[in-house]
Length: 162
Image (cartoon, rainbow, N blue to C red):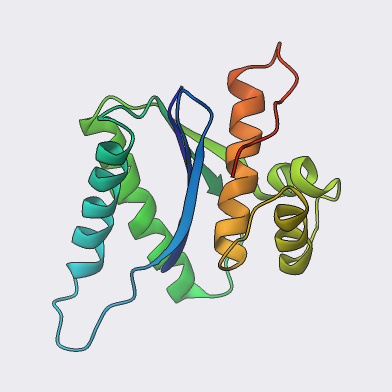
């Protein structure tokens, strides 16, 4: 099953697994650049999602994202809402189920602590054999791990291949 896990935001962490179990991950920056129209970040995000689908052989069977309820400020909440709207629209247009997972649930699944900090998320990713570029990629890997356990609950989670 091809699953895309996303930690949405201006710096978006992502992780994708293929039917074969191979994991690809990274972190993309969608900050507006000088002299760009305001909507460019959303167009780039949509292009990123289309590229993920292409890299997955044209099929993404589910998208999981971290459902953030508390934001650092009004601007962060607005930006998150914009990314979420784009993600919802893309999933609807491509008939891909979109599944939210709570922040504490992701952290607890990955580290055993529902309030784990960024360093603990990165440390756990490294302990599992990954080399995350930043905490956003580590979060996406954690979301993917949780998604795999949800999608295949009768099977003990297999180690994710980096």
